[in-house]
Image (tube, rainbow, N blue to C red):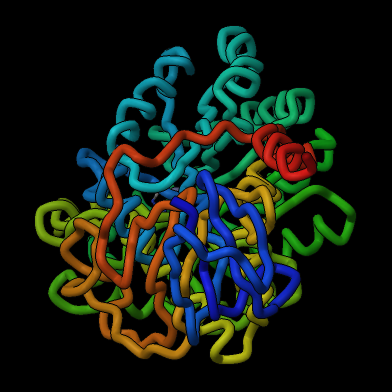
Length: 475
Ligand SMILES: NC(=O)NCCC(=O)O
Ligand SMILES: [Zn+2]
Ligand SMILES: [Zn+2]
């Protein structure tokens, strides 16, 4: 059945205007003021914004880590994402040394199909470069539609790759049309500092932050950027947490390098002091890179405002406080790294960013959706309100005030990192390809309805499906 969204204010990365949206066959088929309403379901968006669905470029759902597995899987994680105004997630498909990439990708498809409530895609971790990997990577792009590779510069003896691997991944990505993503922290230095801390009897959660200093992130970010320049390739730095890394990204971009930077809501509003909370509560805030001293937040906000950083990912990687974070009592290195952020990403940027005058409304849409779609080969299928685009739409009330809490959130995890935070603005209804996933704050979606999306190569202006959708509107 066709749907018409009426009385709302459409907000894209470029424009803000009043118009109605006609949805047919899962797509936006027209934007205008007068539509034949016969047989249409009318959605009243009075007092609300009509936003393109958020795109979360950084999630870890159903991911094994530190001897346990993240609490949120593709079902609970994507359901919570939808409640938070996100309609597409790009999750990290892990690989193991010696395992065929195809097998790792199949494992991730098995985790997600029949579970995801919204559309999704994968990035592929590259942990080693050898003849087999080089042989398989072209098909990862052309057949699997996975056009971004992730290299970890930290987590020694677990995920960490060496500089040769990073450099050769950058060279290969350049040839194949893929984007290389890095977790940029100097894993060797961190490994030394953590061992030393434990030897000295420093076992509390705060030592997670103290053994991963901003300099280790700045150094790795600068190194990755330099290697990107040498390879004439393209780089996306995930979860930027500090001034040291922003400086290196800005420096690279000023030289004309293709370097992009993502930050996360936790680094914008929480700080290192959270790790000092008593009764082991600091463990709730253990993730990598760690929370920083408060002054870094202004640098991150300013970088979002002036375009030195371009996107906001959640780095959703949730572990219960009871039974999972607990693994690190008496040894902070055993606390599983990660936190629950998927649901609050969009609202926090709106409330703390737009409402507090730090960024504009159109920048907010760009940072949470449009730019991500463009960088990761999803545009214009995803990431905008335009004729021919998927009807992934959020009806967002910009004035409602509420308090974030684990009691009301939809993630499966037993705490919320932003507990007690007052925010203004809330997604009221969320549509994925024209079907409600959340309607008037109630879940009406279906696990398994989310589709895997094959993405365009890096730098291709339009995704294949985007091209198709535009062609069909021109007829
Ligand atoms: N961020 C974090 O602590 N856990 C997830 C894995 C990663 O992104 O490094
Ligand atoms: Zn990371
Ligand atoms: Zn991550």
